[in-house]
Length: 494
Image (cartoon, rainbow, N blue to C red; front, side, top):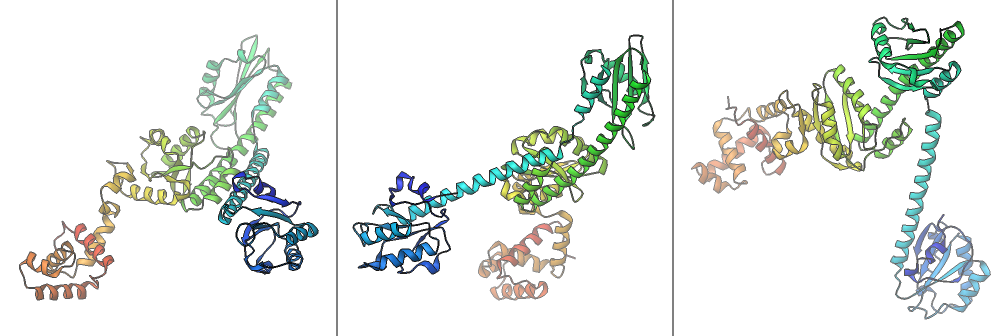
């Protein structure tokens, strides 16, 4: 909440509170010289006046102040050194009687300066409120979406006095080893056991006993190919209670992993929608969605958009690697309309290109822009993507733009446009049109260039306009004609 006292505290303004009360919070600054400005007030305003419309007042001040209070004004400020050399005594009495804050505005302080200072205070308050709301939203989102496998693994290790780990298909740990005996888990043995059973599906289990300890490895998951395996090393033989505990933990872990997979798919859809909104220019909605996503990623203040196409498996693989490598702030990735889209801080571009290089994808890199202009970057990334080829699978917007406007037109579309526009014209017409554009429509210069009479040029231009429907006095039509001639330069007329 911004108060009039906050404004008075701005020493540079030189405002003096002649009478101060705890009134309504400050909502805005209004300026009026009307004897009754209340029809134009909404409440919470600091009313500034030089007193021009109140010159000579005496008893009228009481009713004036009463109306301001009834309208919900936060305060009244009177500029001195113009109409009044000092504040009228009856005005001071009325403000005290009605409980309205009265400010004296020195001659050297402009009302614009007071308005600007109030606006800054109100903007600061709004920004602070927004930050607090986002922080609370972020904390609540984290609490609601948290899903961690580690506590379950730690509990299992404690119950069995064992070493416990969750490993990937290659035997590398995803979580752990955990537990008081974690050093006893032989990861080389675990890798060998995973390699032996990973082709046997979810029903496979491996148990190895060496007399002093037992190592058990079993897949985790509810359907499909297992991606994670539970490895447990406990002292002595594996009894029924211990086996039951491991089985129960495996089921719970499988359920948790499945929920994580579902959540990951949901998070991907959410990020994809956020990226779609961002690339459409709706930064605010995109930020709300991203804040609700796990990890709470933010949009870089300055960014590039990358758009990638290719085989579905290649896109999925690239997305997996991008999600793993872009866990830190400054980048995010998702699928939008069948394309893999990445949004990243410009400094991260080399690293991202390293990740997707050799993937078989074609990549268009958009221009670097502020986050509020992400749509421009997405559009330029699309133009760059259109110019990729098997020989040049990665194109940056700068490369396309530097090649001139013709590079922005897809080749097939450009040829079709040129053929359609120029089809009615013979070689003589095309030569005349080219000279006309080259000399910016100066018919005398065109006649000299072609070695013909000015009337001949005028007649040919009229024929060209009739055949093509172009108005060559229109700059847009001239641009279209120039593009058509350039795109058809290697295609002689029929």
